[in-house]
Image 1: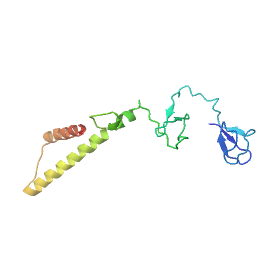
Image 2: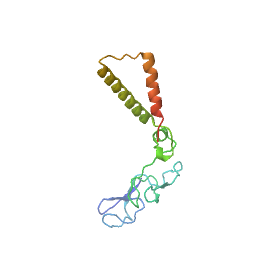
Image 3: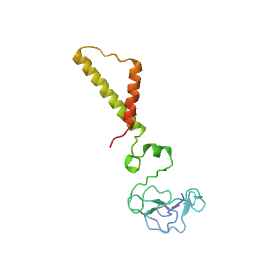
Image 4: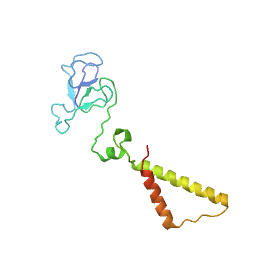
Length: 150
């Protein structure tokens, strides 16, 4: 992005500025630094962005809205990250994200283990669960954890 440097105070101003934003000096003879917007090719980035707070059209590649000051967050809806981390109130229903499933599954495994330890402590005995029963239980717990209830 090109900027005009004020000859009076040295402040950087937007490329199309006529007067300096700091001292009010004319930028008619100011030097331009950076790549001019006229030279840049924006053909691959032709979508317009709307501010989510005030619904005003945002300047291309802006970081904040010039009308309300809201920080612009750009999300590419086709990306894998967006699809994996979309919240349930934005249209996805029924399923869980991988982290929700993992967390819920671990919680149920921990609670089950504590329950078995409590039973073993009360009965003053040991509880042996063979691997061929334990593994299907773990799979079942994570499968149940992936089913999100409302």
